[in-house]
Image (cartoon, rainbow, N blue to C red; front, side, top):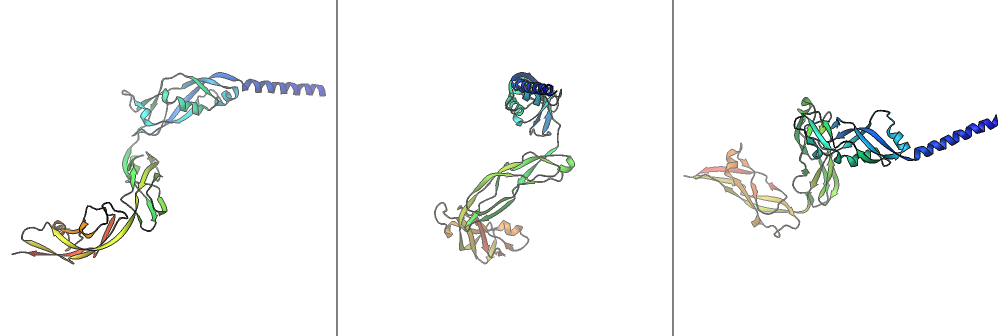
Length: 314
């Protein structure tokens, strides 16, 4: 009895070795596949499945072939991300696009795994029908939280590329969306220009065309200077005089630490009250305008406004 059991164990081990050896060998196989793509075609849902079943013929070990055929007779499902520029619209078929198989070959190989070498694909192109979606184009608004080193500041507005994005979803949901915000652009002790990619805040129930944008925040070192300048008037109609009080105000401005053209002096700057601003104002107080061709990052006045008195000449 013991010898019989030993004999059975020997047979089982031999069978196991034979199976392991057999399935470790490389074989040719044809694998049916369905291809589902993710893309960003304007006006359409992001996903669609090919109308055709693709047959991939290639070589792999028996174990890998078994793994690919674990779904039985059902085709292997492959999910692939494709850039929208590769799709070509079908003229006579609404919402239908074709995709050359040449644009998928490398990605199909990646999806099948390193152990399956594709020899032949039985299709030249695939056909996809995308579901139309409503969309609106809204501006992207930068959410900024910056802290600067002493004598450094942000110059101008935050630059975003792109500065607007498409938002997809139901019409009712789209009516409530007016803008999309970036995730916080948050840095501390900043002393140089910032740039890079920043994510967009997701909007519940809606899909964004992009999930991030490029941003740039120009930062420069500045020097703050104060000057007392006279306030002049322009555009006064004939027969009238506009008197401003006070006639001189203090201008406090920030300019580049090393300004182009050398140091900024009083002769480079002028404060002007336009009569049109006075005529269109609801009060007699007007904020003078700073007129200069020099680089000024920011400025303020003390006092901020001047009193205007109109006198008719006789």
